[in-house]
Image 1 (cartoon, rainbow, N blue to C red):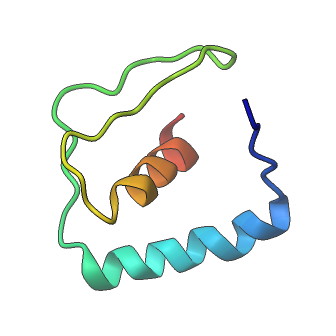
Image 2 (cartoon, rainbow, N blue to C red; image 1 turned 45 degrees about the horizontal axis):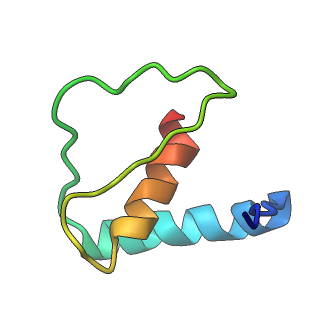
Length: 67
């Protein structure tokens, strides 16, 4: 497995850019039900039920803000 190497600088640039794109192009993201409480060192697979160009970015933002 190739592990991601997240850098602070990349996140400082990428997260605000994604927030701008979401505000401009996405009207709403709805989460049905409660978000699960996931312990810090537990693997988690997020699988959107629709193939969109935005799916990977939505999962990234959920991971950034909620997990």
